[in-house]
Amino acid sequence: MNYYSTRDQKKEFPVSAAQAIKQGLANDGGLFVPECLPTLTKEFLSELCADDYATRAAKMMKLFLADYTYEELLSDCQAAYALESFRGGAAPLCAVGNADLYSLELWHGPTAAFKDMALQIMPRLLSRALKKTGEDRTALILVATSGDTGKAALEGYRDIDQTKMIVFYPVDGVSRVQKLQMATQQGENVRVLAIRGNFDDAQTGVKRIFGDSVVADRLNEGGYLLSSANSINWGRLLPQIVYYVSAWCDLTNGGKLGEGETFNVCVPTGNFGNIFAAYLARRMGLPIGKLICASNKNHVLTDFLRTGTYDRNRAFHLTMSPSMDILISSNLERLLYFTAGPAVTADCMAQLNEKGCYTVTPEVKAEIDRVFVGYYADEDETTTAISKVWNDNGYLSDTHTAVALSCADKYRADAADTAPMVVASTASPYKFANNVYRAVSGKEPTDDLAALDELSAMTGTEIPYPLAGLAERTVRFTDVIDASGMTASVYETLGL
Ligand SMILES: *Cc1c(COP(=O)(O)O)cnc(C)c1O
Image 1 (cartoon, protein in one colour):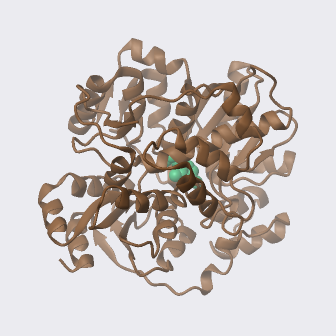
Image 2 (cartoon, rainbow, N blue to C red):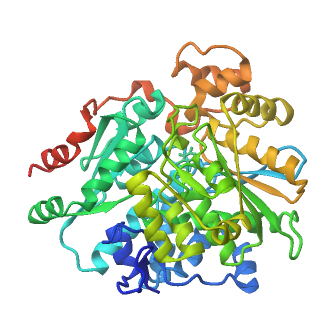
């Protein structure tokens, strides 16, 4: 199976899976997509039901990675999803109350956020990709993060052979816990830099470096090639398809889903990667009904899904769900490709670049409407969702998951749709303990860090191992730079 750019109108430039993973972004600025989508047959799915998570992942990923052997994938998946890093299981499905509502907990990994699901496996795929493509340069991975990606990428890549990583984050756009997690990162091949600006400034800066041939030449001379770990990389997206299939297996195994019955999925969305993985699972034949795209106060996606116009020209809000504080959802480009084709995609992306907005045709909108529905929750609704689900069901959710819980509720009320609902739970409540504590106790925590202990004492739940003892770790990274200085800092890091 080959991969093409979302903007490659004549399908002129096929690349292998290993090449797509190594390169991250296509040469024309588009995102890599597989040339076709394999079908999930009944037999294949029922086989997966009997497997553990790592085996489900290896079998699913083998469908897309023709140039990797099943044995390679199985050994990588077993290492990535081992119980010692995913101590609460890889993607357990947890019932919330008795209303056929389930939380797909994707945050039991080494950084307590769902990015681990992809970033524990992706460096292993890249490492093999370098060998498979005969590459002797070092892969330089640049990451723009709104908080969780950065830490998960650092943890996934640290001390991985033939790789170096620089993470850029908005200095005032991440929580104190997120900042501490990144600043205390171990590993000889990693560096963390704060940017004066918001997440989009960081992401735009990284994209610009990727598109700059002068930078590429200079890095090449120094023995480096650029690669990305952001969710625009196919190696990030593919592992995310797995857990939706796994959720179906668990619902089926638990007798919650009969033959031919569908379930709905609600995803707290930022860059549109996680929900797009669910869309691919659906297109492959997984019986998903609706995909509910949940946004916070930065509801550019809700507006797009309701009107057909994507418009990033609007105020940017910092919210208590910072990983969703995004105005340019990069993976939406892949949805445009799959619903409207490469010509429309290239045109929309050019418009987005030039004037910050575009409108899809009524036909394309109708196609998207068949699957997606958009809702958003403001800050008050998010707080209410946390306290309500805790009080009614004894289930503690983080701020991002709470946005989705609120949106799932609204959808169910509006659509009178009683199919089982799986909400993607994307972070441990302890990662955003201050706001979660405020919501469940109605009190102010002593400070952001003390909030972890206070939340634990109040709810009788445990602080997950990646977040315990954070204050005692040594801070290694304190630099803050202007967004315009990103390229220079890359050279400086590498000594070029
Ligand atoms: C990254 C992230 C999201 C958004 O996921 P996308 O794939 O960017 O849509 C939601 N919640 C948390 C906690 C995250 O870290």
